[in-house]
Image (cartoon, rainbow, N blue to C red; front, side):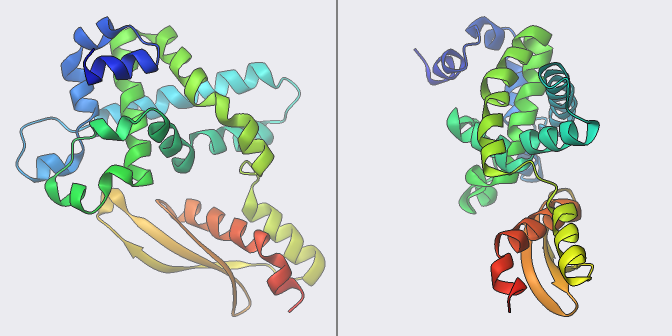
Length: 235
């Protein structure tokens, strides 16, 4: 059995799906940096766009059916936790999807094969390719088996919590202060921005976090502040 056959065996998808759409999956595995290096391949950004939409729809429907008593806000927080970068990157690591990621030499040397945002994008692109090659049902099964299964752990660890709202409730209720956020650093190209944001009470930094968007970085900073609230609350 070849390595690519082994991948499809591990995710329980008929290898015929790959053989009939090999070019599509190769595109899903190709990062944009390859085209910057002068490669002729199509990169995976269009498939990532499609996969993101498919993932959101499948996740939304599953949550809607499985939690009939939850409010829209709760369902949204569950969905956000399931499809966020860190969770998708862990899915990629579980099935060793990063092994197949085609990168420029520079991106590969910088550890790109293990970067959360590249792995998360790869999962979305793979879902896009799987949807086009195998259809809705196979794709749905893949998402259920490898992504939805993480929900229990996400809930146990509190990763579904709207950290910004919770932090604001704590600080306003106990201290009468509204936290504010400030960009500490940003790096990367426009399509691969990374933000580092701090959350403050007055001029006092109480948490900081990073993410691919300012919103994601703010949520990370707020969660860190909540985790460390004993350090600043009683200071």
